[in-house]
Image 1 (cartoon, rainbow, N blue to C red):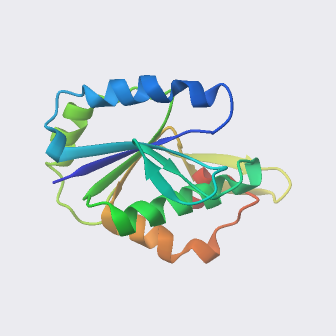
Image 2 (cartoon, rainbow, N blue to C red; image 1 turned 30 degrees about the horizontal axis):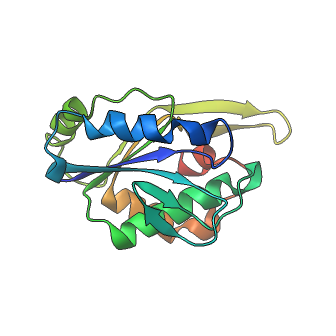
Image 3 (cartoon, one colour; image 1 turned 180 degrees about the vertical axis):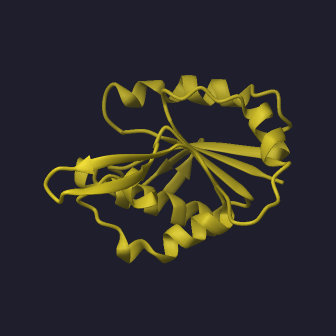
Length: 165
């Protein structure tokens, strides 16, 4: 089983300053390097490329493009990286990679989602809205494929957390 850790990041200050620390932290996870891979993803680049654990995406960095950036990252890794589970976290998330790997390895490997499922009440639409906590998503490769296949149903007026939830 191979784990892919994707860290959401921005190409602007001060987020871009955290990349060296993130790379150092996840390089020393205590897990064999053939069992996991990690990368930071960010927008505002000229092409979709992987450069020293940073997935640079050709998506402008702004609130309206958060979902598009996630979909671009998911699509790129789905096509280019071998993995069984994707863990999408933010720069402020603490992750014990070795313990998470051991836990996921016990799952039955059907399409799985792991993370907090939350609800808020949209006062304008007068309805409850489900969303996923963006700080910690664990998705099987099959779930990633489902999200990519349903990209046209995403409402980009909402954050990615709402579309995933």
